[in-house]
Every structure is written in C-alpha cells, then in structure tokens.
Length: 94
Image (tube, rainbow, N blue to C red; front, side, top):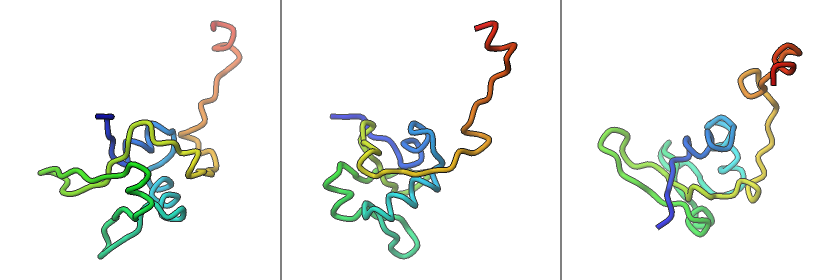
C-alpha cells in the first residue's frame, strides 16, 4: 500500500503552507467543511484521499504521498520563508 500523509505534511512536501493547500483543495472540490471540520468530497476520495484516526489529533484527512498538486494547481505568492536568497560570497564557495 502506498504511503499516506496528512494534508499538512503534503503541504510541507510541496513547499507551500498548509493553509494555502487546504484553501486550494477546497476551491477545487477535493474537501469541504462539515460542522467546522474538513471532510473529503467524492472527488477527494476518488483522488486517493482517505482518513486516519489518531488518539492525539482525532480523525484527519490523508493523501497518497505521490498526490499530484498539478491536478490542483496551487498558485502562491512567494514569502520570505519560501524564497531562499544566497549571497555572492556563498555562490563563490559553491
């Protein structure tokens, strides 16, 4: 069985914030809120989404580690945290 990761972990692997990923997944119809809790839609389930239960976190959504964000099309504005700048000195040492 393919490894599954939480939405937050998938966002980290993809280099975007979890807030951005949840928002995009919602906009694209993969998830929606039910009683203020994220839930999978039929499209989300067909795309490989599922649920795991944790004693610490309760029920949460998981995705195949290979879930392709290309099908979701995440558009983000780079933030200071996501853009890694390098100095000319560091370039010279590379």
